[in-house]
Amino acid sequence: MLAAYALTGAARQGRVRLYVVHLGGAGRIAVVPSSAVLLSAGLAWTVRGSWLLYQGSGGHLWAYQVATGRTRRFSTPCCQYTATVAARSRG
Image (cartoon, rainbow, N blue to C red):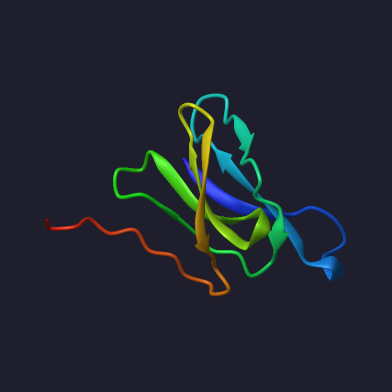
């Protein structure tokens, strides 16, 4: 799977939306819910690749479970930076 942002209107407006592209086969494309933000958005896959973490509406961190379409909004203010990293804990 590939996660990518795409412009949703005129380039000068700087609004993007996040999409997940299922590679191979039919190449199905899914719109990630609550993902319309300004161009500076960051994203990362969880270590096991089952959740996509992203800057979502309201300026908060969101998670999208691709297999089920389930979303989760965190209270964590998010992402006025360009890199998001998911790492496995040793504990």
